[in-house]
Image (cartoon, one colour):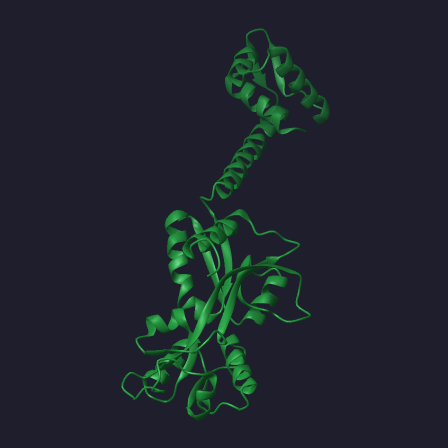
Length: 297
């Protein structure tokens, strides 16, 4: 049984005339009649009483008509649904991002994307890079913004560098500056109380690794917070924190950059190698690149 045959049958049943049905369907009348006969042979029953100038449905035709109409309506609905997704009128994008990017880059990008594709639902998973990589590998995300490099043993991902971002030190503007110079060294953190993120934050691991590379263990007055909490603790004067420049610029805190480029991080967009992201996600990728001026900086 073919959809074309059901459409021919439903049109003849509605118009009660083979010639007019053929004209409405823009097919030759003999071709339409042949398809109806083929459908009757497959079903093993006549669907129409064929009297000159009087076409009526048989009992079998009366039974088939509502089912055929339902099948044809569902087919048209499925076609419209697929076309809407293909034309980005509907759909969903699942994006993962670290909390620092959710507090800086992501809101502006999502605002621009939503203005362009208002019918696309946006799902955001906030977490550390390793957690996001696991979600990507399990198929729970279409794209993820991650901090690279990831190290060995990770799943097969395709990563594209988006930007290189300076890390800076934020401190309370109500307290004296952490150093007298315009820029500070990693070694200066040795004597400063620090507010530290919870375990699993990429920023935590990067900061601790930099301190150990400089030959000391950092001292924490408070640790275990999320981004908003860490910024609040710094604002309250509990210590300094190392955060991305984009976050620092919006925090209202005093910002002290590091000397040189030792404290930088690379942000990349990633997806599974074996599962190219859907079109709606690829469009989000494009908006990311546009927002960043076409690539890494």
